Length: 333
Image 1: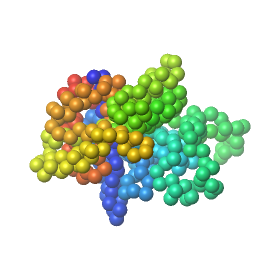
Image 2: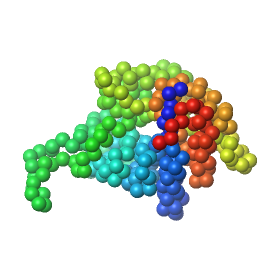
Image 3: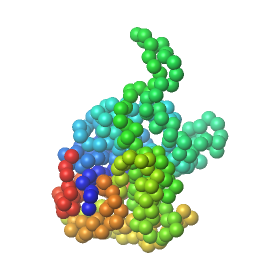
Image 4: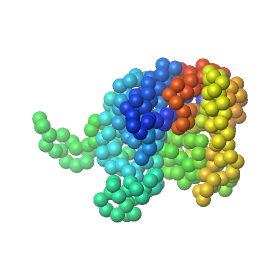
């Protein structure tokens, strides 16, 4: 099993009437992840929910609470973003972090579009290009190419380009893939590949077959000589460090989500990977049997939305001390 990098994806939950406490607890989780030796800490970007609505803002704060941890967004829906301003924000965060930023992006119609789009766009939202071309715009800007002839600035003149220049950030861009078409685009664009525990069932009802096909399509589309990272997300909840009440809660959580893993769901034939909940020894066996992880560089723990801060801490600790070492490839950052 080639996995020697472990990261985690936090939901960034908070109470509607007390967001500050929840956000600070998530920052503390990032500090803990670094102390435990995780390679990266990622945050979900969520709109109209009790979660992080601006990944760039949160990761700017996280950059001041950590020194080695890779800081990632999974994912920023490009449809609501101004490409130029997003490029400036991401470049600023990368500078603050010392080049540790990893940016996950997605194209297409973002969630809650009917509610949010009229607040974002001055014209008809139906006319907005939500395709992959919208991602290409901030990517091109992050290359810091000149936008025109020199301009007057305080103290003299300067070549107009996105500032600060984030050297290397374009090589740390990731695309969240859930279909063959998106896998093909991510490869042709030379971006790193993000796979989660959710995907589309295209010509198959089996989750692993679908993701294997996406990796095949991605690797076939990569430009010659490009060696990009593949990260796989799985819900991993060890019970070893949990008390009896918490173990019961974890079991109920997994049971409530099991039915969705048995068949395609909805018109888009969405497929879900099974949650890995139980003793570390059993989780290790299931991870070793996961054919997608055998093709990946990194395992990203997708922390459940509904859990408490102390439960997130217990999960990260159990994985660091009980799961990862048993895989024989644990290399602390």
